[in-house]
Length: 91
Image (tube, rainbow, N blue to C red):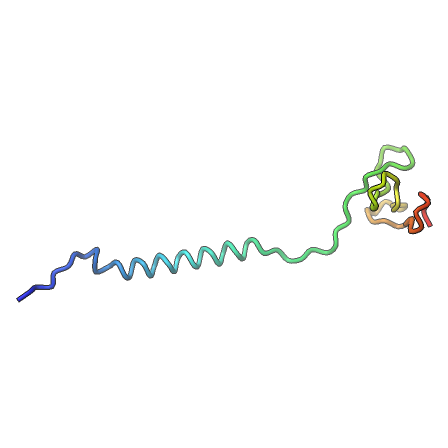
């Protein structure tokens, strides 16, 4: 007769694999959750042009042509006056 003697490691292998897979799935779920961010409100970048020469940036170059086309007249960080016709002056 054969005796079925197996090593404890061999008997525990299925359980160890199951536990390992469970931990890796849990870690992956946490990592995926950490990388997902809530969509932020449309953030307006900081102004890039100092139109009045006071040392404070107060206009944006949205079109990329080197000319200001949006101005922050009240200093709240949001464009107030826009140049929609492209003449380089607020409309």
